[in-house]
Image (cartoon, rainbow, N blue to C red; front, side, top):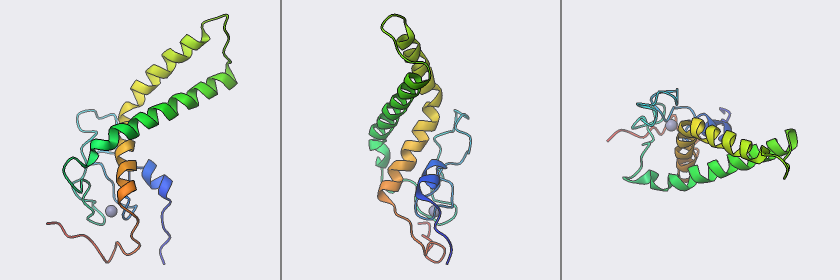
Length: 137
Ligand SMILES: [Zn+2]
C-alpha cells in the first residue's frame, strides 16, 4: 500500500488534507500578492472541494492569530537566548520592531497556512482517495 504522506508536512506545503497530494492554491508563490489566496475550487488530485461551504474560512482569523502569537513567542525566545534582554538598554524595542516587520512580511504565508490548517481540522486523510475521487458537481 502507498505510504501516507506526513500530516504536518502536507499542511505546511498547503496540500489537500484528503489526499495530501493535490495543491490547495493555484499559485505556489505566496508573494504573488494579487492571487496568493486564490484556491483551486477542487483538489486537482482527488476532487475534494477546497471550500466545503460558504463562509467556511470565517474562523481562520483565529488560526492566523494563534500562528502570529506562536511566531512572536518563538522570536522572543530566540532573541532571549541569542541576544538577551536587559532593563538598561532598548533591546526589547528592537525585538518588538523586528518581530512586527517579520509578522508583516510573513503575513501571506501565515494566511495561507491558516486555511490549510483549518481545512485539515475538518477533512481527514482518505487512503482510498485514488479510487474514491469526488466528482465535480
Ligand atoms: Zn486532494
